[in-house]
Image 1: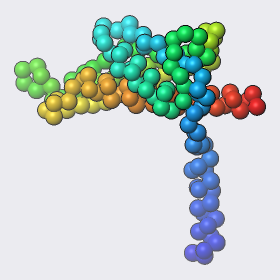
Image 2 (image 1 turned 45 degrees about the horizontal axis):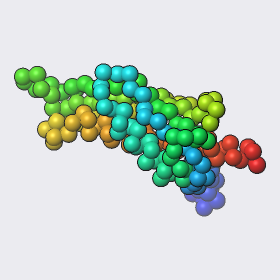
Image 3 (image 1 turned 90 degrees about the horizontal axis):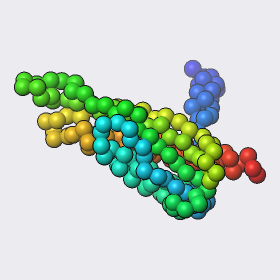
Image 4 (image 1 turned 90 degrees about the vertical axis):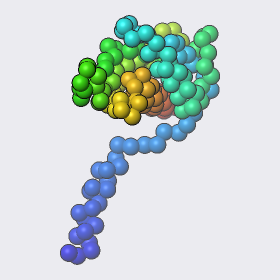
Length: 168
């Protein structure tokens, strides 16, 4: 095959592969006051809201460059756990299981200081864990919350950056 033909074949693939991605600059929050109230948990799983809230607060500080506050925030990031579940995938004798899964869905909203919803979304993740390796559903939930938190905060950063670009 001629060298020019190879380039002609690869060029559209290379352009299509990088067309939709952009690296977000850190500091999209610009040091503004930002609130992340405790996540709402209407499920029977008491305590699952705490690791989600901790992860959201840590990621907001790390990725957005914001000042976390409860008084007069410019933005507020609210999260709500939607029906978290766990299941045994591979059963053992006596009712125990060797492989389990944890599933969670988190609905979130970014609000302005007046309480108007600016953007929102839903993130859903499922993670399997092996009980023979002493993995637990709680550890699986913690790992899921870390993944979901980072995704939510990156979505918020993208929205903040787009809003800032639209104002300029």
